[in-house]
Length: 292
Ligand code: C2E
Ligand code: MG
Ligand code: MG
Ligand code: MG
Image (cartoon, rainbow, N blue to C red; front, side):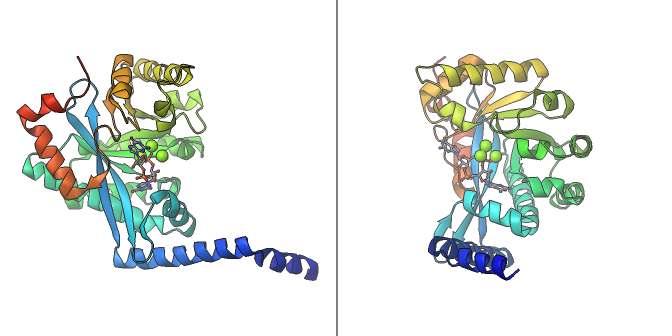
């Protein structure tokens, strides 16, 4: 015992480890405070129809303005929030805020068809998810058809029967489901026939090298699009950064595009301006970067 304890103490005093665990602990604590004080904001990124450029959706992406560190990436704090369980209250806030924004846009007549909310594995595994979604829709008055939940393949590697039951209950409510970062996780083709999903989001790593000379990523993108179509799912390409990417994806038959080429994720006010500009008929054609 003494030996093991000693080893642990020694390990804990390695400078880089001490720093790392202190940083993690500090951030976890800051995160707790941030949840209590509500220091978060949702940014929105449009999804557009690949052919018409019409804005068909918006993805809500959380942002944390840390008092000392400035903007902290969700890639840093979402995993921490997952580990600590803080994702639960945070997730409820995200869902409510996203639905609230959508209701606001609908009232102004500028809303896209749906808003997408990222749901992390721990949230998806929680018994309370369905009740939270139903309650949030009811309280905000958002029609379920206007809500889309993005889940990753990690979620699907859990207990299959439970995952299917949860997805079916979500679908029964009228809410749609997208598989995020498709192709990067446990892509068992078997779950594509088992799980009732609506949309595959092609991961940005495949889109990034779409035009590379090897043609490998183009083959992957094209195959995912064909597979999705044959299974009755729609497709969104993530990380579309150039007109060339957009044109190639459109030619492959990809339904929707999302990425910096269309817009970065922006705060709600900027997103509303974007929606108004895009809604103006005159603005739509010049804004379309993809040739016919
Ligand atoms: P994700 O859901 O796959 O979101 C896409 C990420 O790609 C976002 O990063 C977005 O800003 C970025 N992105 C969009 N277009 C482009 C592009 O053209 N090029 C490049 N290089 N990147 C692009 P972000 O906002 O930093 O979020 C990172 C991840 O954090 C998300 O990946 C998601 O897994 C997680 N996350 C973000 N917001 C939430 C949230 O509200 N709840 C949960 N549970 N997770 C979230
Ligand atoms: Mg996402
Ligand atoms: Mg993604
Ligand atoms: Mg991602």
